[in-house]
Image 1 (tube, rainbow over the protein chains, first blue to last red):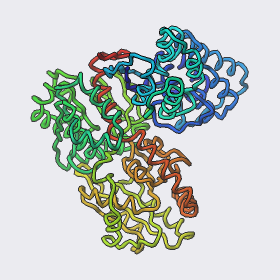
Image 2: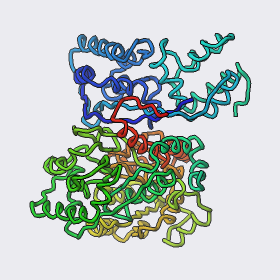
Image 3: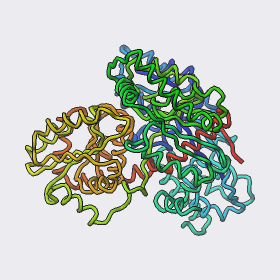
Image 4: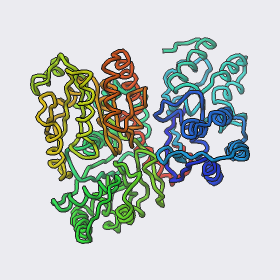
Length: 213
Length: 413
């Protein structure tokens, strides 16, 4: 089992309208794309749960463009082979909007979009899970950031873009298909890491038994 | 685990402390020096008082040095502070020379310690020139900015930027405070210490003791702002808000509690302005507290119905997190680091004027259920994001990241 800490690093790049967002996004470090899709889970916020990445949230809250926010929000980062493809998809959606816009709304200086990149430090907890039956207790004992690492960050590390639990179980003998399906049904975007952990503990306990405390 | 770390585990959770130990393992034995300009008073000194011993408990050889200056030096650095937070302040060439020479005197005293350290954290602008005065430095140097530099007065920022360019990294509380600098700018909000006298649980006797001590009526509503007497904290605006709200709650009392710091020469003048604005109103209690009045501040925050932090500029505003930790909703100025803590309508209200503050005071005093609900959310928010353990974890992460030369993914064995 591993744990991680995510360091947020300001880039000094900002956007005050949609065109600036699109132009800055084109030249930004790919770690920044990662941070703005996933970083919301590990930082202080009470964001509108309707929108699950920072681009969508900003377009909604600062530019008051709900339709575009919805189109950006539905982008699932796990659908893309890598972060460059994900970046291109966001740019595509923004360009489509820019093509159709008669005017270019600006937000105030106070509400600019700040591009942030991330740096992830991964450390070994020196705890090992050898049998699937140990998973419920192991997940219950994990830190929230460890849940982030294995359930969220894993999606950009594993070949199929899945979480580490599904990835591991798929290589083991035994029938874990139903459990994998339930894991697939857990949406990490719409809850805090504490809630996400509780949901995973419940699912793994129901399927594998064990002590969830 | 040490007794101190065990106590943090009880408040912040075992996992938080476990993470600290794992992160600290590869940093064991490193010599880390923090440098700032005051031992007491203000948030930076408060944070370092706890952060440095905790680093030591984790096996890091951490120390804390304080630079010394005269009144002229602190006058100049206060002007810097005001300019960096947006005021057009002119600082003369002789004052700039004096700023450099005071730093040079301090560099001569500290050079051996700083040059041999593995990591040096320089806090705020006062000691910023030390880096160029330590040419044989061996470790990495990080500039930690605690103030709102989102719209600095450019001539002063340009002057300071000359000292900052060669740092290996800088740390800001918010992305909005960052600038184009030739090194990584980490974003780390400050934190409160849940075990300190300022924040620990109190008995009901300890809480009620402040009523008698300061002549506050326990049966009447009380609003509170705790902060230094500094124009950026807008104590006069708080008095205006109190007067507007009092029309609808005639029994309302206001407490303005603040102390002074050795590096803030303007405090006395602002205190005078505040007293004049209060105009002998017996229900406005202006308390000048000593720097060690932590238990008193803790009790006042718990005794208050609502806490205000109506700053016009604010790097972070530790008093916001302190009040939220005590389940108090905070009415805060819509600026800087207050925005990170006061989530409008969730953990309190963000306001831009005394009128706005008055409206929110009236709303909360007349909707007690909402006041309590927001207070509960405020405490949970602080628990998740603004405790010392999270702060320390992020400092350790930066140290590790710098050791590993800034790859986007650092895997530790």
